[in-house]
Image (cartoon, rainbow, N blue to C red; front, side, top):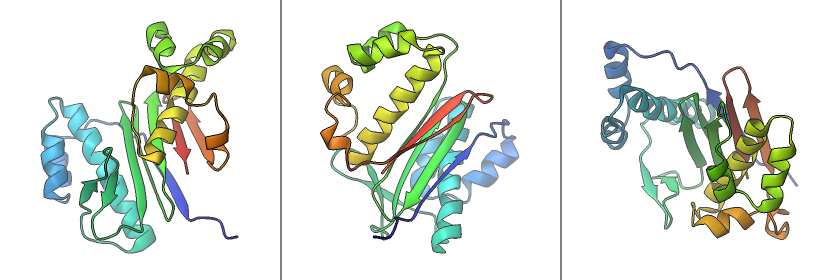
Length: 201
Protein backbone atom coordinates (compact mmCIF):
# COMPACT_ATOMS: atom_id res chain seq x y z
CA UNK A 1 0.00 0.00 0.00
CA UNK A 2 1.47 3.35 -1.03
CA UNK A 3 1.58 6.25 1.39
CA UNK A 4 -0.69 9.19 0.59
CA UNK A 5 0.77 12.37 -0.80
CA UNK A 6 0.27 15.03 1.84
CA UNK A 7 2.10 18.26 2.59
CA UNK A 8 1.70 20.61 5.57
CA UNK A 9 3.27 24.05 5.67
CA UNK A 10 3.14 26.76 8.32
CA UNK A 11 3.97 30.43 7.75
CA UNK A 12 4.69 32.31 10.97
CA UNK A 13 6.20 35.49 9.54
CA UNK A 14 3.63 37.93 10.87
CA UNK A 15 5.54 41.09 10.04
CA UNK A 16 2.78 43.64 9.33
CA UNK A 17 2.35 44.32 5.63
CA UNK A 18 2.59 47.79 4.19
CA UNK A 19 -0.42 49.11 2.31
CA UNK A 20 1.49 48.51 -0.93
CA UNK A 21 2.22 44.89 0.00
CA UNK A 22 -1.39 44.29 1.03
CA UNK A 23 -2.71 45.65 -2.28
CA UNK A 24 -0.16 43.61 -4.23
CA UNK A 25 -1.20 40.40 -2.48
CA UNK A 26 -4.87 41.27 -2.86
CA UNK A 27 -4.44 41.68 -6.63
CA UNK A 28 -3.37 38.07 -7.22
CA UNK A 29 -6.07 36.19 -5.31
CA UNK A 30 -9.54 35.19 -6.48
CA UNK A 31 -12.41 37.63 -6.27
CA UNK A 32 -13.96 35.27 -3.75
CA UNK A 33 -10.95 35.50 -1.43
CA UNK A 34 -10.59 39.22 -2.02
CA UNK A 35 -14.11 39.79 -0.73
CA UNK A 36 -13.54 37.48 2.25
CA UNK A 37 -10.32 39.23 3.25
CA UNK A 38 -11.78 42.71 2.91
CA UNK A 39 -14.73 41.68 5.06
CA UNK A 40 -12.50 41.48 8.13
CA UNK A 41 -12.51 44.58 10.31
CA UNK A 42 -8.88 44.57 11.39
CA UNK A 43 -5.83 44.80 9.14
CA UNK A 44 -4.15 41.90 10.98
CA UNK A 45 -7.09 39.59 10.21
CA UNK A 46 -7.15 40.69 6.57
CA UNK A 47 -3.46 39.89 6.33
CA UNK A 48 -3.91 36.45 7.91
CA UNK A 49 -6.72 35.63 5.50
CA UNK A 50 -4.56 36.54 2.51
CA UNK A 51 -1.49 34.79 3.93
CA UNK A 52 -3.39 31.50 4.28
CA UNK A 53 -4.74 31.74 0.75
CA UNK A 54 -1.38 32.74 -0.73
CA UNK A 55 0.25 29.77 1.03
CA UNK A 56 -2.32 27.51 -0.63
CA UNK A 57 -1.61 29.13 -3.99
CA UNK A 58 2.12 28.54 -3.68
CA UNK A 59 1.64 24.92 -2.63
CA UNK A 60 -0.79 24.21 -5.49
CA UNK A 61 1.66 25.69 -7.97
CA UNK A 62 4.65 23.80 -6.53
CA UNK A 63 3.04 20.39 -6.16
CA UNK A 64 0.33 20.37 -8.85
CA UNK A 65 1.36 23.04 -11.36
CA UNK A 66 -1.90 24.93 -10.84
CA UNK A 67 -1.46 28.58 -11.72
CA UNK A 68 -4.98 30.02 -11.59
CA UNK A 69 -6.23 31.43 -8.25
CA UNK A 70 -8.22 28.62 -6.60
CA UNK A 71 -11.95 29.03 -6.01
CA UNK A 72 -13.76 27.17 -3.25
CA UNK A 73 -17.21 25.84 -2.67
CA UNK A 74 -18.44 24.53 0.65
CA UNK A 75 -19.65 21.02 1.39
CA UNK A 76 -22.63 20.31 3.62
CA UNK A 77 -21.10 21.42 6.92
CA UNK A 78 -18.90 24.18 5.54
CA UNK A 79 -15.72 22.26 4.66
CA UNK A 80 -14.18 23.93 1.60
CA UNK A 81 -13.42 22.06 -1.63
CA UNK A 82 -11.55 23.26 -4.70
CA UNK A 83 -13.76 23.99 -7.70
CA UNK A 84 -12.47 22.07 -10.76
CA UNK A 85 -9.95 20.12 -8.66
CA UNK A 86 -12.10 17.88 -6.47
CA UNK A 87 -9.40 15.18 -6.24
CA UNK A 88 -7.01 17.61 -4.53
CA UNK A 89 -7.85 17.91 -0.86
CA UNK A 90 -6.84 20.90 1.25
CA UNK A 91 -7.50 22.65 4.51
CA UNK A 92 -6.54 26.06 5.88
CA UNK A 93 -6.26 27.48 9.38
CA UNK A 94 -4.89 30.62 10.94
CA UNK A 95 -4.38 32.22 14.31
CA UNK A 96 -2.69 35.47 15.24
CA UNK A 97 0.70 33.69 15.40
CA UNK A 98 0.66 31.85 12.08
CA UNK A 99 -1.18 30.30 9.16
CA UNK A 100 -1.27 26.65 8.13
CA UNK A 101 -2.16 24.86 4.93
CA UNK A 102 -2.28 21.17 4.07
CA UNK A 103 -2.82 19.70 0.60
CA UNK A 104 -2.80 16.16 -0.69
CA UNK A 105 -4.66 13.32 -2.34
CA UNK A 106 -6.59 12.26 0.79
CA UNK A 107 -9.12 14.14 2.94
CA UNK A 108 -7.36 16.33 5.48
CA UNK A 109 -8.04 18.61 8.42
CA UNK A 110 -5.65 21.14 9.92
CA UNK A 111 -5.87 23.50 12.85
CA UNK A 112 -3.40 25.99 14.29
CA UNK A 113 -3.95 27.82 17.56
CA UNK A 114 -1.96 30.20 19.73
CA UNK A 115 -0.65 28.89 23.02
CA UNK A 116 -2.21 31.17 25.65
CA UNK A 117 -0.22 32.80 28.41
CA UNK A 118 -2.72 31.46 30.92
CA UNK A 119 -5.14 28.56 30.71
CA UNK A 120 -8.78 29.56 30.24
CA UNK A 121 -10.46 27.07 32.55
CA UNK A 122 -13.97 27.78 31.28
CA UNK A 123 -12.90 27.07 27.69
CA UNK A 124 -10.96 23.99 28.77
CA UNK A 125 -14.00 22.59 30.59
CA UNK A 126 -16.16 23.28 27.52
CA UNK A 127 -13.77 21.54 25.10
CA UNK A 128 -12.35 18.68 27.19
CA UNK A 129 -13.70 15.61 28.90
CA UNK A 130 -13.10 15.36 32.62
CA UNK A 131 -10.29 12.88 31.95
CA UNK A 132 -8.61 15.27 29.52
CA UNK A 133 -9.11 18.25 31.83
CA UNK A 134 -7.43 16.35 34.67
CA UNK A 135 -4.51 15.52 32.36
CA UNK A 136 -4.14 19.19 31.49
CA UNK A 137 -4.19 20.27 35.12
CA UNK A 138 -1.56 17.69 36.07
CA UNK A 139 0.77 18.46 33.15
CA UNK A 140 3.99 20.44 33.46
CA UNK A 141 2.66 23.03 31.01
CA UNK A 142 -1.17 23.12 31.06
CA UNK A 143 -1.36 25.77 28.32
CA UNK A 144 0.64 23.65 25.88
CA UNK A 145 -1.23 20.47 26.82
CA UNK A 146 -4.60 22.14 26.34
CA UNK A 147 -3.67 23.71 23.00
CA UNK A 148 -2.43 20.35 21.76
CA UNK A 149 -5.72 18.63 22.62
CA UNK A 150 -7.80 21.50 21.25
CA UNK A 151 -6.01 21.60 17.89
CA UNK A 152 -6.15 17.81 17.60
CA UNK A 153 -9.92 17.86 18.09
CA UNK A 154 -10.40 20.74 15.66
CA UNK A 155 -8.25 19.05 13.01
CA UNK A 156 -10.26 15.85 13.36
CA UNK A 157 -13.60 17.64 13.09
CA UNK A 158 -12.36 19.51 10.02
CA UNK A 159 -11.15 16.22 8.52
CA UNK A 160 -14.57 14.60 8.79
CA UNK A 161 -16.27 17.82 7.71
CA UNK A 162 -18.41 18.04 10.81
CA UNK A 163 -17.35 21.29 12.42
CA UNK A 164 -18.01 22.17 16.03
CA UNK A 165 -21.39 20.71 16.96
CA UNK A 166 -21.70 21.41 20.66
CA UNK A 167 -20.15 20.94 24.06
CA UNK A 168 -21.03 17.26 24.57
CA UNK A 169 -19.67 16.25 21.16
CA UNK A 170 -16.41 18.13 21.76
CA UNK A 171 -15.91 16.71 25.23
CA UNK A 172 -16.47 13.10 24.22
CA UNK A 173 -14.77 13.24 20.83
CA UNK A 174 -11.74 11.16 21.83
CA UNK A 175 -13.29 9.07 24.58
CA UNK A 176 -14.26 6.36 22.08
CA UNK A 177 -11.04 5.37 20.31
CA UNK A 178 -12.68 3.24 17.61
CA UNK A 179 -13.47 6.05 15.11
CA UNK A 180 -9.87 7.26 15.47
CA UNK A 181 -8.21 3.97 14.59
CA UNK A 182 -8.04 4.83 10.89
CA UNK A 183 -6.95 8.46 11.45
CA UNK A 184 -3.34 9.64 11.47
CA UNK A 185 -2.40 12.76 13.44
CA UNK A 186 0.73 14.85 13.07
CA UNK A 187 1.63 17.64 15.45
CA UNK A 188 3.84 20.63 14.83
CA UNK A 189 4.62 23.11 17.56
CA UNK A 190 6.77 26.18 17.92
CA UNK A 191 7.09 27.33 21.49
CA UNK A 192 9.06 30.42 20.47
CA UNK A 193 6.27 31.61 18.18
CA UNK A 194 3.70 30.20 20.64
CA UNK A 195 1.52 28.03 18.42
CA UNK A 196 0.61 24.39 17.97
CA UNK A 197 -0.66 22.92 14.71
CA UNK A 198 -2.31 19.54 14.22
CA UNK A 199 -2.85 17.67 10.98
CA UNK A 200 -5.40 14.87 10.66
CA UNK A 201 -5.82 12.53 7.71
